[in-house]
Amino acid sequence: DPQSREQSPLLKRRLRNAGASSVLFYREPIEMVSGSGAWMVAANGKRYLDFYNNVPSVGHCHPHVVAAVADQMARLNINTRYLNARVDDYLDRLKSTFPSALSNVVLTCSGSEANDIAMRVAIAATEKRGFIVAENAYHGNTAWVTEISPAALKKRTLPDHVIAIPAPASGPLAGKNFAASVERAISELTARGHGLAALICDSIFSSDGIFADPAGFLKEAVEKTREAGGLYIADEVQPGFARSGDSFWGFGRHGVEPDIVTMGKPIGNGFPMAGMATRPDLLERFCREVGYFNTFGGNPVAAAAGMAVLEVIESEGLQENARKIGGYLKSRLEDVERTTSGIGEVRGAGLFVGVDICSDGRPDAKKTSDVINKLKDKGILVGAAGLFANTLKLRPPLCLTQSEADIFADALRDALST
Ligand code: PMP
Image 1 (spheres, rainbow, N blue to C red):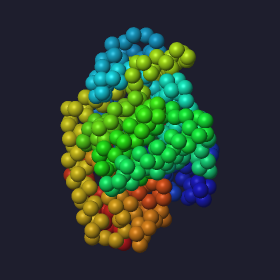
Image 2: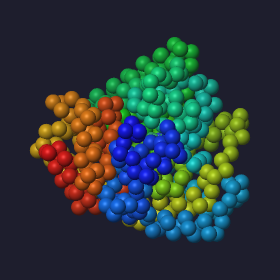
Image 3: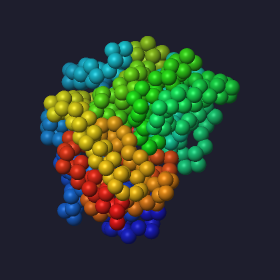
């Protein structure tokens, strides 16, 4: 409850300005003023190691991204109805990361917008309205996308055309169980008269608690979806852009090809941009009915930011770093799991790791929140996810070093032992 917080003058101003819509971290929100690499600096001079934020994915204020944005902003920024080579240079490069069938891209300003169009493309293509989502999924904030985001619905009541199913848990039966849930949901959507437009999921199930393994667990569910005439929408807003270490896109780890991919967050390292990639035939069906236009989405400055991000991922070997340092971090955390009580499971891929905090083998949201606050006092930022809000969600910038991974693992061990 923000009203019961110790209120700094800046917090008071924020609450006055944004009212009920202000969503802030921590009982005493931190005023941040600068950042570099995996670190942020608060107004009081305290440094924080950022394990929360997967937006500045190539590192806070990366000089190459800052220079590219500033350079293009000083040249020209325009409404997207003009031609500009920087935009197509970017789209060509972005598309080189996708399966070749996904050859059309619509750039937007937020992941929510990208998912909103993805839903509309799926409905236009299938002439059906039903959607299958994971139980605690979050896909965005437009009116439509909120309806497929159980995590955003405080009363958890989904509309009739949306069915939520459990995310695949870890273990050898993950794929089979997930596919069986998809099959049941398809029958139910058919019985309700909606039919299936699409299965939409974030391929690392981040808000459900980060489920990555075994790689390949999406395959059977995607087959069932296609057999029923539905599309598979891969929401790559969280796992995309090399975070999983094994592949550039999260769906790549599972060996599946989506009909539609949506992307956001790290795409511009903080510059507000996002997008949707799909097959030309699917986009044509949608555009036959709707004259879609986005004033800012994919303007030359956005393209400059996006291109700089792709260049840094490649030149600094960040996918490989995510694989290597992510693997190191996971093994250090598995050590902490063995030597302290309080961790149920460590899982994830690359630099996207989930740590379940438990008491007597049960999810413990209160203890999780205590750990998050202790870590904050130690200068480390981390969030929680999962149906029971007991999974520490670790998503540091992809440039994380081994010694920064050590700082985190040591601090978590101390937080669990005191
Ligand atoms: N999809 C997923 C998986 C997300 O995590 C989010 C944001 N948390 C979104 C979509 C929405 O993106 P945005 O906030 O840019 O609209």
